[in-house]
Image 1 (cartoon, rainbow over the protein chains, first blue to last red):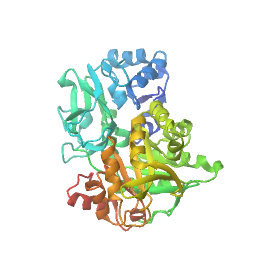
Image 2: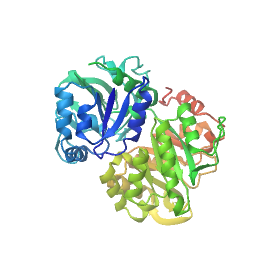
Image 3: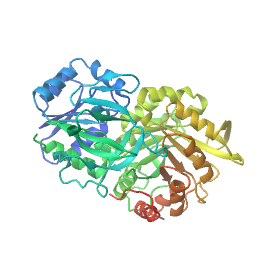
Image 4: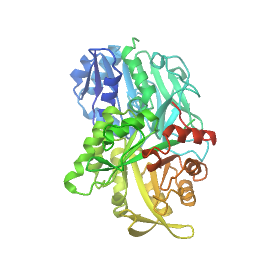
Length: 214
Length: 253
């Protein structure tokens, strides 16, 4: 099995690469970090990471000629399992409102909006470890303790994805209101948190992604 | 619910830990990567490397340390010390740092904060502030390990760098650093309440009550300590249990 981590100039992919390798318990999983749309087309599973601002990431993705088309082909037409992380998850939305309006991939309709916690004591960015409230069961959360007393995920973000369809929300996290922590439909899943930085929960989630047969 | 973070900080010089970690049987207490793995296993919420390498030729050693740490530890890593240019930031992020802390370069040129935040995103730009009390309720920024005054008011400066895009403040009281007498709570609170971004309190931790004070009274969202953890006085677990018993939200995964 091959996993492609899409490199479009959005920061460090080293951690994501190593975390997927670590989580790949079975033999014969090859993990590549690539900006080659053909390699993405050939991969069995695709990870789209992303840090920074939405508009910058979208520009970065567009600057890799043929990448958006390769992703559409593999993920939407081909049904290949896809995991978006942080801004890589936000890019699934219809549009982002960070530093101006930018179009997303529109795979999970909705908007990426600024976090506005109800309490003025709560700081933005939402930075650190928080628990997940599951809205609907998902294979990527199999055997992972969730809820108030469950494992924690590492977040660092000032914007989050408000989905148009509540059924696309897999999990939320509480921060002066509900923030979208995980979205999904069909063979597409995205996490606002960083599984590659979330120790136990993260490695278990990535291992589940590698086993996932949507 | 978001948990408060406990962050051990390692001073690294020429790729080696200064004042090595002694709380577990490490084969090589001077190896930052071994120490990082030990803290990862112990449940630290984040790690901080402060590079105090003096010579220019050895500046690259930290990149190797960061890279090897990121291969072994799947937890957030902040790296600071000697960060002067956006290339320095880019190199650290590409090596595997999640956040980069800048200090003197921000004091010398405030626009560097804006440039860094625009280029890499606020979420990875930490501005480190070393402050000393100079009058009642007035603290001044110092650089060069607390030796060089800048004339800048710490609270005004914190507001300014946050407005420019800093995503987090790492605040060290130079009056308390190394004293084991606890954080400067008045200072911590004054700055935490003045800015919208998270604040890491640092400088002066001598016991576990100090960690509680930093969050409860200082309004910090994270607490950083070095010696109490490195020398095995307290484990990360003990620190978190103590904070939990005091009613603070902590992660015990």
